[in-house]
Image (spheres, rainbow, N blue to C red):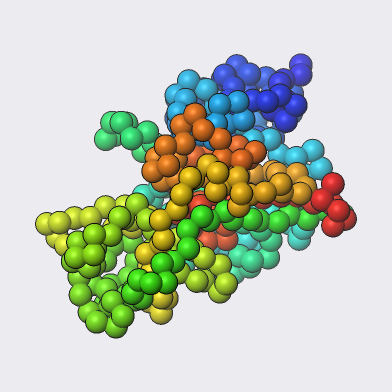
Length: 343
């Protein structure tokens, strides 16, 4: 039986029955949908995570609670290892992969594996041995309090809210994978430098503004800062965002979707213009085969991307993006090229 091919049709979203047909045909899939849809799928070569938000080929940004977003593993690739890893095992995940290929990792939002990866992932052994991409799973904004972000291992039928699912992909010798990040934000160089010494991590109270200690909430209020704009810092040549999650006026603490670190200089970002237009300009026309992509929920919400395109790349809308490390307010994609020709 032959299932629909998402690379031949101008579609990203499929019914449970259509995805089941793809799996029966032997396809290897990376899936995103609400939990009941993923739970209804048969066992097969797939991994998945919860999200009802997507950037689709057919409709641009979409919230769809009845269909599944499909990304198919390229025909030249093969599964080297796939499975669930708990908090204790995840730091050794790179050792399970191939010499040539890439890794996709999905992890539940607000979980211990999510926090461990954000705080310590760059220190884990062999994490730069091959490209690592992925995303943080989440639930709809109106979901009930009992709903938890989940990941799924299709081979075993297991789901979890406290483990990561990892797919190591092997490539032939004449192919290689490349990770690209689309980040529209740049630091406002007219603003002060923010450093974190007393407080670091996902939640902070104290900050140093050009060296002077103060509360971050006071700095934000006094300067009328739009916290839809992330903090931006230069991490070894790459501009990395730290997006604000919440401000607790009672405690005076600020929470982020990614941690802030000691020894890094941050500034709030400059405002940007038209999100979809700027995404398309930053993206250009990538060479090679796009094997994976994801875009941040904050880009989706703040820019009003529902029904709007952001260039030619489709992918799940996520609650944190992974390109070796945890990112926020970015789009991540992975390209496979052969013989350096991009064909």
